[in-house]
Image 1 (cartoon, rainbow over the protein chains, first blue to last red):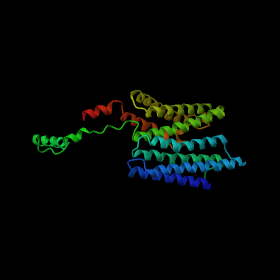
Image 2 (cartoon, helix red, strand yellow):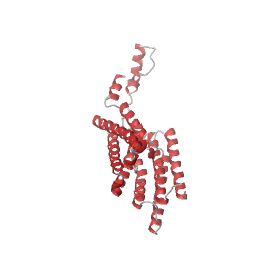
Image 3 (cartoon, rainbow over the protein chains, first blue to last red):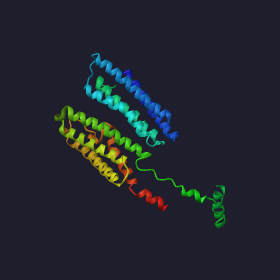
Image 4 (cartoon, chains in turn red, green):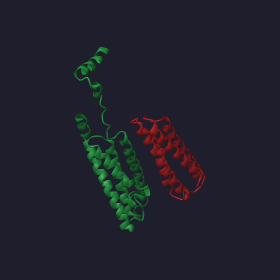
Length: 121
Length: 169
């Protein structure tokens, strides 16, 4: 397991917990839920830059490069897309909608690690 | 302004003194939450995520090596189309969108059950996985649960029904 994967898991888990708690205690989209999505986005940008630098300097990955970058681009769009969607109806449920990002991004970085190193764990 | 407000309870009090609930407050009835709001947002989000991920997967599979597993890859493409139609239809209100969503969800249900069974009966056709392989095992069985949730949601929100109930009660 890489340090990047560990950090990503923690960021995603934190976001999911924050969004779930906010679903229970707020009847509007909470600032902390939105900030937790921004943290996931920031993490993904760092991940992409790190992967880009490594691959540009000649490091090879186990899987297909364009599958890897397909995942990165989709993952980068996810927090933004879900945020816009969650803001359409500003209720308690916006927080629960936003909690999906942490769950899905975790699965995506798991797959990214598999493509990159051959195994995530 | 204040005279208008106080006159109604006074009249009510004379008519039946035991009634203390404010009748005028009852007129401000809350409109029922539309199908694509509130909890409905969650279901549409789940469908949207499956639409995006199955589309990306199908595109990758079909463009890279379609010949490796034509049956599995065609089904991936079909599943992606079903999820996209279901997401768009669920997100729209109106009787036509409701019918389209119902059809999409029923096709999805048939797909996940049919393909799930098929992958167990003829595994040699599926050397590469689809979203619906083994009843959605690769996606934590969410594809198996999702059509039931979608169906439940659609049947709870039939077009015209919430409004009819609201005027009755």
